[in-house]
Amino acid sequence: MNTLLPVTPMLGVVMALLALAGAAVAALGRSGHAVAVLAAAGRAAVQLALVSLFIGWAIGLLPAVVLFLLVMYGVASGTAGRRITRGRTGWWAAVPIAAGTAPVVVLMLVTGVLPARGITLIPVTGILLGGCLTATALAGRRALDELCQRRGEVEAALALGLSPRDAALEICRPAAARALVPALDQTRTVGLVTLPGAFVGMMLAGSDPVHAGAVQLAVLVALLAAESAAVVVTIELAARGRFSR
Image: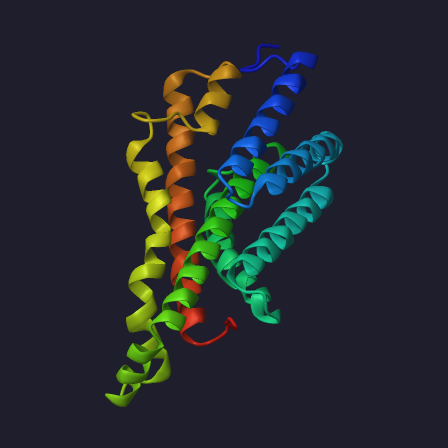
């Protein structure tokens, strides 16, 4: 089978060298992430190996697929929550991730655009969860930072008669909404700057460019819709004080 990168021992050696180089650069630049680079690379290797084996077994079993998707959702929610706050209120991050991912997946399933099979359900849902994770974490963190740094402006808005929610929204919404910019840029520049994974994967699997492009467009638009919902819900939760600072 043709692959973009041949899976040989040399691939492992190159990956290890790149991880070490990334850690070395981080150390020289005193970014504080040298150890994190190595840990992330090692963790990714172990996780992908285990997930690949699991998917190979579970991809034809719908209950196993659903269980796997729930695990992915839980990990995404926990990761986003920790990025937003160190407090116990991080579990609220599960709400925007679900609000962004679930409606899009349901719509695609109901209309038949997304076949209810593990081979398609797992990767598409994973892409949506990953996008919502990033959007939620960025929006939540930016919202809390704005509310903390501009507390005086929030109090001034309260003095003018605005409700606590409306006062918080006026301050945090502009900055937090910029969490959607990466998804917008990715969609705007697709095909001109980069060829995303779905397109490349289908091409390598033998699909014609038109079919691959149509699938990639569907994924990008679905991702943009999911992240838009996640960002809006995250800002609303931050304005209502659901995330502790």
